[in-house]
Image 1 (cartoon, rainbow, N blue to C red):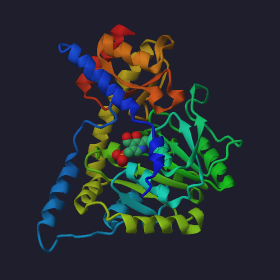
Image 2 (cartoon, rainbow, N blue to C red):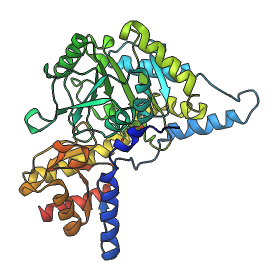
Image 3 (cartoon, rainbow, N blue to C red):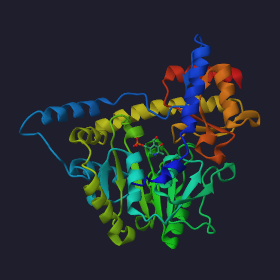
Image 4 (cartoon, protein in one colour):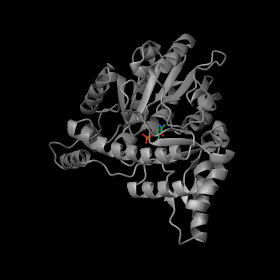
Length: 390
Ligand code: PLP
């Protein structure tokens, strides 16, 4: 037996383990100090009522012979796919039901989709970025090239004809920067991908945070995208499903003359037995009028937190982006501090914890990510402390 030695090339999750270690050491040495975590990428508000009711109802159905369900369709029940189809239609995207695949979340899909592509493809990843894109391709042994996201391009890199790549990752609204591509910018990527016979893997996990109607929530709002893109989305941040688990991918039949849709279905049928019926019923409730109203209340809460953070940074002239169409605020560390220097500065002086930007890629050094997923009380207290310190 020979193991897949590519696993040795995956960078240890140095970022979050180091953050956790520094925080716990500080807490041990300073038991009287209250630490506020604004580094979390997880939601804190509970599931909305409509979802909880649907989960309960579906659980009851599972306990009754007549309504009990066993194995379901691997690619998801039509009742949920129909709701997603209608949701996409609200932003003028027409999808066929068999272009939608329900899953247990975007992270799994982003990793699993790589089964469809040969190992000798070159992958293009923006730097900084959500680490999963790099790790999953490293495991497979694919060559990765990077494109710089930095202050010069507002952390929204555009295609560079001198870089040749077969698989392109785009994440908008972006984790960690909160930057959002507009339609003209995405059109450039779509044209580049079509011209170079490349595929865009578009991660729209934070699309629900977009409030400006002119900004695209889906790559499929862009002409020409159905021949070059796959989209990944999730209810994790949309509806607090991080622990409940439900997401979806969209693989258009126009891509690769239908072959990618066909082999993704085949891959899911062979390796996956679908998302639990109960969870899919909970997910369905997100897309009802009541569900939409209730999740908007939660999203507004996070957005208000983001505004509070953004306002204090503005007051102190600290360069930052994000927050408006994203739960993430990406700031330039003051006084040319490195990401880790700023991390230590905040922890030691005001016990506010964020995420060092360098953990998302070399271009993240000197930057820092704060999130709006905390409670209002903690966010207000953290903002007050920042106001006093900065
Ligand atoms: N994509 C991005 C950009 C994320 O930040 C996350 C989670 O933080 C995911 C995907 C994973 O989402 P899920 O919970 O659906 O696996």
